[in-house]
Image 1: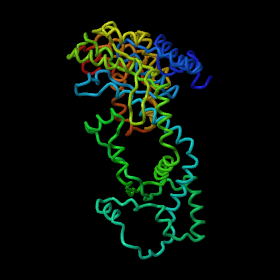
Image 2: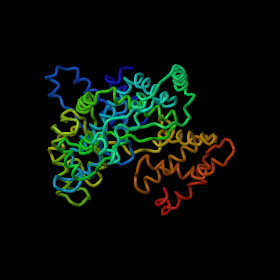
Image 3: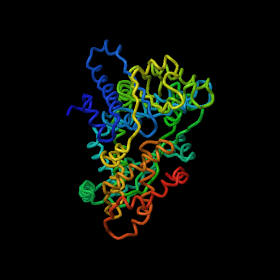
Length: 474
């Protein structure tokens, strides 16, 4: 198989097939869009600028796999991905989120991806330093007598009066005021090896860690963020770093210290720059409920809805958005919009926005056969999930094929007779079917249970027959 960067459309579809049943046309469309990104990057830099992504509009009822296709696609290629609801945004001048916030959220997702990659590259070095620090805490040196110091620093005294002491609880400061004879040094080496071997994982230790940042979600901070200013970071830079003591296990302490040391070893500016590049070249923004912002949707405030479309338009067309990490260009971000379009239709969108989503894909309603496959075939199939959950209570559960067919038939019928919520109906039905078993399993002895067609009928068939009851329960 090719690398993640240059997977062929056929390979991408095959990977999506491991998690999503059916919807071949939608899978092909997103696979081609992804491959076109790779193709663009192989061209001359001047030519690259003229090739924009062909954004996709997915049309279909809820629960048929629209969101899952986009999310799995991003996971496959390790691309920054966010899902937003179109109804959460409002026209400029109204109370609510502005549309540019979706791009800022994408950059935040890219930051996490790049951080993970950068931290992995320095993990071995960070782990070594963290083990050294932990060994010094577990085997402290012999404290020296403190000498008389000069008059106290007035600035430090002021900070102490505010409850802040940047020099307190620092292992480095403690180490300079201790003696480390050879016996302690040898003991520390032994402790280091025991930490590496996991022999001390459950032992409790007290460590000093940097106090977590307190975020301010004020309207002023939201307004400043639009100008690329984060009030939390600005105030955090002025405030001295304060440390607090925590009692944790050695395993937890090691993870905390590795995180701290990794942050010291990486360059934050490099992370920000790489994240901006990654987001603008590989980012995927999935906009759900796209049909709800048409003027013909059942929502009130039609003028505002059309205003949201006009605000989204420049983002999709390509514009610069200021974030606290730098300016990002949105020209090559892939936008995937989705909606049921029951009341409205794609042609109800403003013409300019329609033109920015040239690829239209209609997703099919799920059949009974699709439900059977959803229950059994994907890597994360629902039946496999419940079997694994009950195994933790030493209960081995087996579903007969007839039982699975019956569950699929019930789900299909209920969808036809009530609202069609697609594969989400299976969650409700399976939870109802296994409710008693999930409740009683911890108190049962080890055993094997087979879910048969009769068991399914006994538990939920009467609910399906009662139309009024099924509307409330299933």
